[in-house]
Image 1 (cartoon, rainbow, N blue to C red):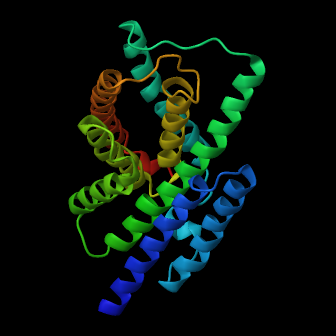
Image 2: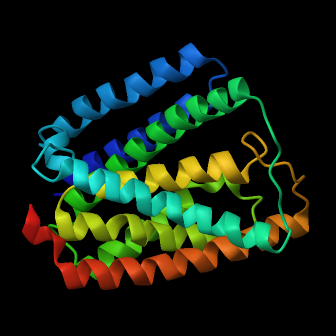
Length: 249
């Protein structure tokens, strides 16, 4: 038993390390190669602990997968667009006008980086961890453990103030709830992708944000983001529980 647990822990740690690689390399080709390496290595590693491919991790095609993915993307986009609207309404941030060429580059870069992040993190923290933990723990304990681990996963950003860590914790639950109800990763991936994409485009200097982030603005953005995340969590829980979306698959 201990041997099996150690193997699962080893696989988890390796997957986490591999998910960091695309953001460490400094070239486009390096990003693409290490992203491909992550998915290839995932398929090989999970078989070590008797998980047969992405399907058993919740990433599989079914009659509602497009509906779940698109719904998730919409929810994710609305989440960070709401954050942007609140901040811009109070003149805390502004966007800069840009050329069509630069806008296209921003969208392409955001699409690929947030796309990889959404798939990789959902495979690790929802697909893999839930698959491993559900045999031994209750859903409440699983939610707590995943939220803690997902927050710790973002350790490289330790310079961020408290509200960002609240947001990571809450969003981990938001990403996990659809997986609990649907047994599929598609809505979780959609929310993750939509939220990260909108954040990159509207709320970072690499995107369209014209405002220079000082400590005060970073703190305000964090609290607004954390507050909207809590509202989103309540909305997701009520809607998913009421609709019982797992019955439509």
